[in-house]
Amino acid sequence: MAQKKAALACSVCGNRNYQMTPTQMGQSTRLEIKKFCKNCNQHTVHKQTK
Image 1: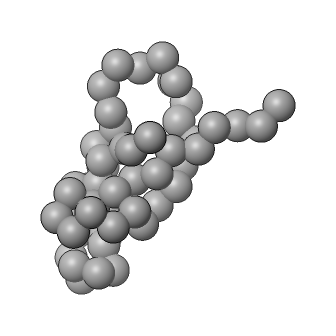
Image 2: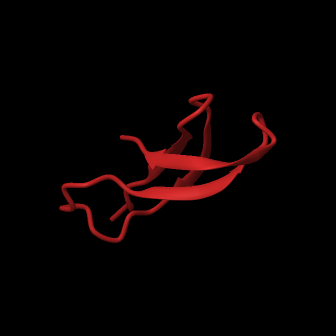
Image 3: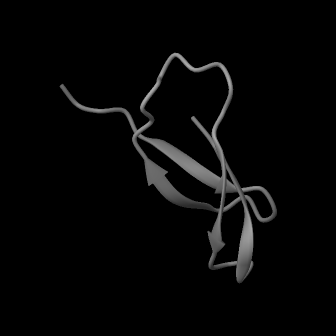
């Protein structure tokens, strides 16, 4: 069975830089991680998208 993937989008520029496999699919809140965005050239908050 294939695993579902979720993309992480930068909250500043909206670019989808990272992909991950979420561990809890039934989670009601979206994941927010501070990661490096190569377009903004700084560490920004990335939010989970569909």
